[in-house]
Length: 187
Image 1: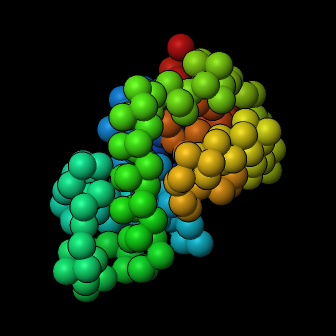
Image 2: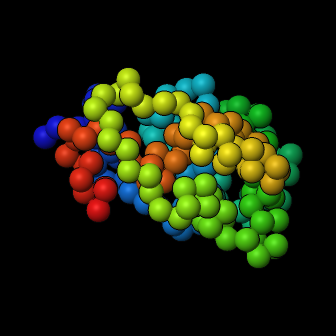
C-alpha cells in the first residue's frame, strides 16, 4: 500500500495517516484540540506529539475550553511536572490563553469551525502534489489564518503551524497523488 513517505516509521504514525490526516474536520471542539496540539508540536516532530496525544487529552481535561480557561498556578505546576506532555511553560500558557480566545469567539456568536474554514471558502483545497518537496510550509491561506487567529488573541499560531493544521484538518488535501488516501480524502 502506497502512503505519503512522511508517515512511515511506526504503526501509530501510519494509522494516523490512514484514518485521520487530511479528512475534513468541522467539529469546533476537535479543531480546538488539533490547533493546540499543532502549537505544542512547534519546534518538534508531529510524531512526538502524536505519541503523547492521549496524555494531552487527560492532562488538559479533554481540551474543554471552559475548564482550561480557568487553570491556575497549581494546575500549571502540575502540567509542568507531567512527563506525559511537552513541559514547556510558554506552550502551556498559550493553551490557557487560546481557551480564553476560543470562548470569546464563541461568546460573540462565532463558530470556531466557520471562523477557521473561511480561509478555504468552506471547502477543502485539493492539491495534486507528486512529491513531498512540492509541499510548502506556508500558503497565503495559512498566512491569513495566522493573522486572524493572532488578532483574535490566539498564540502559537504562526503560518507554518496553521498550514500543518490545515493539512491535518482536511482544509487542504496534501496527500501525494500516489498515496492510497489521496482519492478517498478528495471525495
